[in-house]
Image (cartoon, rainbow, N blue to C red; front, side, top):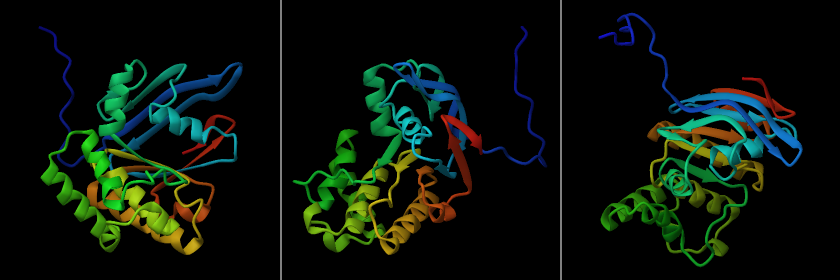
Length: 237
């Protein structure tokens, strides 16, 4: 029988990082307006990548495609073990709950829930056992420096505190990838700097890949690679 086997890697050969995100020849249009023109992008497990470009370059559209919010018109996207191109709605829901964490510029916390409850929600959505959930939330609150604010609701917290809760919520389920859309955009420079340090620290601690959409060049300091988009294309990676 003729079998195709991968050649063994020599002991002295450098290891190749495993790609956790693979975007290949992706096109996306809204009506007659094509927003993404054959985008290719790979991100290794645990790698931190900044995505930059002018308004209208396709950054947010690419993020929406990676999150499964927007379907693509051509090409393929794989994140972890999930192939998004032909996934059903139920598969996409499971993907969003298990594989990715999303951080928004405007926090998107539930106003009627406390910091503890907002973070805990990610664990509830994947049926994490109650005891494990409580322990993990407490650990994350301590990691983001908000153990003393566990019972406070979003309207009783500063912008920086709310974003720290949002980050803890995003990694509660230990995703493979964090998609961060301008996470410091609504914060002052001091709070924004602390948020960036926190993202870097948690990415390293839990080996979570980070795709950081930003227009601020200073935010790229926590990233290992900067990717630029223009007119729906990757122009440098």
